[in-house]
Image (cartoon, rainbow over all chains, first blue to last red; front, top):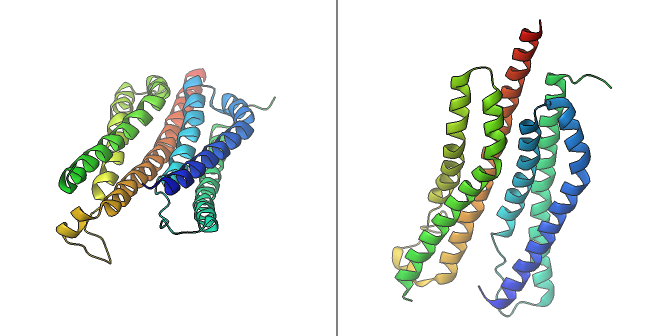
Length: 117
Length: 131
């Protein structure tokens, strides 16, 4: 992989990982409290928290790993657009994953019926 | 390194990486899955969950890797053309890793559903005991 494509790939990777960590930090605390209350088995809470992180990483990295394939004579903005297209794909995947995850947690809450405080 | 050697080494490396993705995911989640498998009401069901979890994740990762073809879909290539184009080989390797990661995410999603059913069964068993 030529150096300019590798640099764009690294930039892509850093942005994606940062976004994932931000999302996980934003959701993590309240999600863990909710799961603790609903599931009541520590292994269950741990599974869903770890699964969320794993799935976020897998779906984001699957886009990033496809790489950026610009020709050596490409202009700077063409690299920017290539990274933007990749990041757009990452965001698409993340939105779908978060929606699916919220659906699963909602089903958990409805089916397991936690006692109200 | 000759082109043929490069093709072989990159293929094996991508395969190993996909296997490690599956195995890594399994290690990351195994303890919590085992915890739930221990808590499900039927012991045999717990055994099934415990044993099928690592197999399914590794297989999901490997199947996706194996399903990617070097010959191209709409633009078929001959073996000679594939071997001489290292950029193309790299692109196919990236595609293999990408599909493997996608499948892994799908597999974990499916296991999320299975674990949900396990949790429902555990709750029902707890309720029937308390009655």
